[in-house]
Length: 198
Image (cartoon, rainbow, N blue to C red; front, top):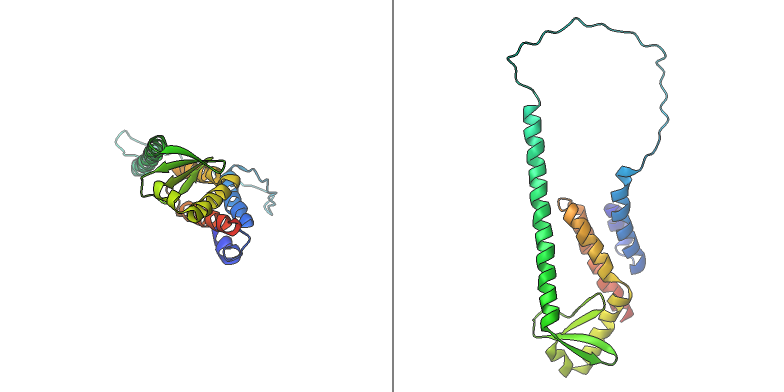
């Protein structure tokens, strides 16, 4: 799906279609393993012959051949669980940081919009229905107007929901490089979509 996107859709200016495709590709890829597609199997073999083997005697002194596999299997699950917990921790830490930023900022009204003004050096951004800007942006009305229009497009297009979906799927599929590539492309599409409307 990602290769198809790179070859045919990435350079197209229809950002809405690109966004729907990227999200759809992720969701469809997750549901595909659970789909039951019955395949009719035909066989040319009509008769089966029985083969009888002589009995095998096993004494008490043996080691199982699966010990190595089980150790490898449990090591794989341990690595996965470590990555899973790391990404959950990162998700919660970033949420806490964002919450503190939103609480520490001063809410201001500007032409009917509710803005969170902060001294943080972060670039302006929106989070669901909130727009976060730097205090200095208020001294440049034309820049502030452009920021608001840009961020309002993100809010109207529900880009925060897209980001949330990808972040949550990323916690489970942290090991999949294609998910990270799609996440990056989706952010670029969001910015292009907002820029186009602005």
